[in-house]
Every structure is written in C-alpha cells, then in structure tokens.
Length: 291
Image (cartoon, helix red, strand yellow):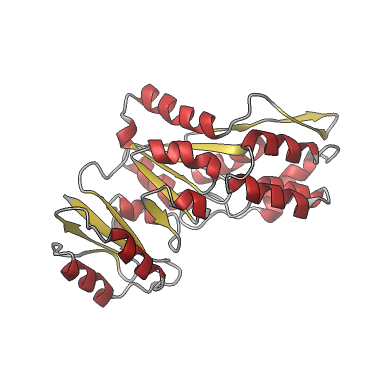
C-alpha cells in the first residue's frame, strides 16, 4: 500500500477539496484525510500510480506538491538536514562574501557548485580564500542581520523529536553558523566545516577534510549505526548537489526548493510547501505539530 500526499504553502492555503477528490477518484484511492485544512491531505492507494510524475507536473501549475510514499514506516526516527537554503533561507558564505565586497562573484560559484557543475571541495576552498582578512566579528553580525530561518523548520524538528526522533544538522557550510542554527531550532547535533581564524580575522582557509557530499552520506550511516536504527528509518532533506548522496541513501530523501539537477533524482520534491511538508509526508496532522 501507498499513500498519496498533496500539500501546498501554509502561508497561502490553496489546496481545494475538488483537487484532492478528483485525484482520489482517478487513482481509485481510499477515503481522504485532511492533515491541515487548505494545506495538506492524503489518501491511500493500492499501488504506485503509473502516471505519478505527469500528475505531479500538472499539480505544479496549481502550486500543489505531490508525494506518493509507502504506507508502512512513514514516521522516521532520524532527521538529517542540510542548512543553507534548507533550514535557513540564505547561503552563509554568500552573505560573508557580500560583506567582503565579492558577493556577486562568490554567489555565482555557489550556484554552479550547488548545481553540480563544480567540484564542491575545490569551489569551497576558492570561495573561502576570497574571505581572507574579513573580521571574524562579521560572522555574528551576518547571523543577526541577514540570516532567516526557513518557515516550518522549528516545527519540523520539535515535532519529530517529540515523537522520539533525533535531529542532526549536517552542512557544507561552517560551524560558526551551524552551532547557532542548531541551537535555535533544537537540533541534537551538528556537523560542518571549520573556518580558520587568526588575530580576529579569517585567514582564507578551511579545515581539512572538507565536509562535502561523501561526508554527509557518511554522517547518515554513522548516526544511524550509533542510534541502532536502519537507514530506512531516516529522512534527509537538502537542496544542492552535495546533498544527493544522503538524499538518495535515506529512505525518505526530500528535495526542498531544490536545484533541478537535484530534484530530478529524488522521489519527494517540495517546491511550494515549507518544512512542515516533511511532517505531512510522514502522516503528521495539524494537531500533532509542535510550534
């Protein structure tokens, strides 16, 4: 058995009952259950629909996301999340580069790296090199004035933890930011790259080995082993090419507002909803979600 989940942006609830019922009838599904009125609904189906991706494409025009997931084991015991453009709206290195006067150039490299056009490790070294001489105090100012949490992030983390899951933030960014984001959203642990600082300024290098695609995949497997759970009990979420290893390995890999090259390789693609969509995919209803 499978469950079809339809979702839209909670900030602009526009999921119509007719949309849900039309698809349910077309797929011969069971009774629909509303997880949040106007935002998310689900219904069971006996088999994976052969036209799933065509329907997904059609629903995109209505700003509705569709995920079809196995009915069993939906609620996961581990959340592994990327940070930049996933748990927060920004790319931290781009914001630091803007402070250093090389924002546009660095943002261009970031886009190419996240699209999988550049080697992540080499691209990170180049970008960090351009930050040489920037006062380390800028990090705190950037976090306070430029960084915004992605909507639904705290609800996602707190709800899963309230039901016994563990949450880990695993980023190709920097510990100077992940420690703040992890604390702010309630993650149990965080991993990221370390910027080198001397005499109060960035020296343009980052600690090796760099935490990239393979390290994120390794983190997924290591944390599952430590917790004594299967990878099938994990959910991963990210948006860039360096997230693909963990997204494809986790049982539920979610491409959130992701680059096209990333979304194309994931079965769960959220383009319109916020991070609470990951709760709806797991079958959580509105009255179970922690603020």
